Length: 244
Image (cartoon, rainbow, N blue to C red):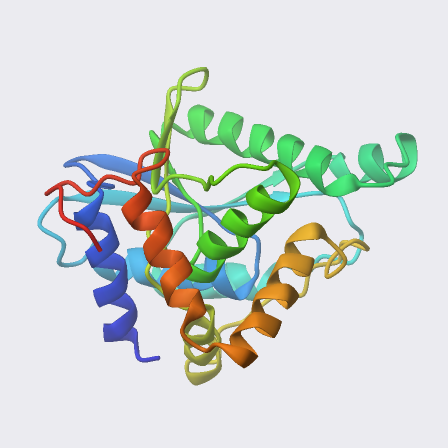
């Protein structure tokens, strides 16, 4: 995927769901993975020509693993002229060593988001951008059906009352395959997650299940995504009231 295509998908989602307002200060949650770095490229490029002016900062929550190397991300941010902020925590120590969680992902995610939101508030930013893409939308819906017994998914825009922060997800129209193509084409410095639970989660199970279904019915993923968009659940209302 070329950069211009990434811009197009991202701007479409931003416009459809009114994700950005004039003067917004947006923190981009950077895990170091392909999705968050693609989002960094997208928003950094869009801010140069988007009609509503906004500022960005890149923020990584360091969970405390000894083998995490963020130097490549720092170099990328320097090249893009984007301020990079790292939040150092002991989350890994708490989750894996002190509490010895058998299912660590839920607690880790909660603590990570809490640390990220607190840092964003302290830095004076009013929005945080997550890098959930189109495949994440479908996989989240599947997880909800399988484990919660309801048709549900995260919203494109979510206001967090307690923190006074708005979460936006500008990559919801971007296919994961396109993200992979983008990072390969532009040699984006992806950082491998040092988490021992990486690749062994319920989300990974949903991902593999979806890939299995697609083998027999290649168009099913698009239908599932359309079902989420057209369901009008949990904030899936376009600004113009139109369907996807």
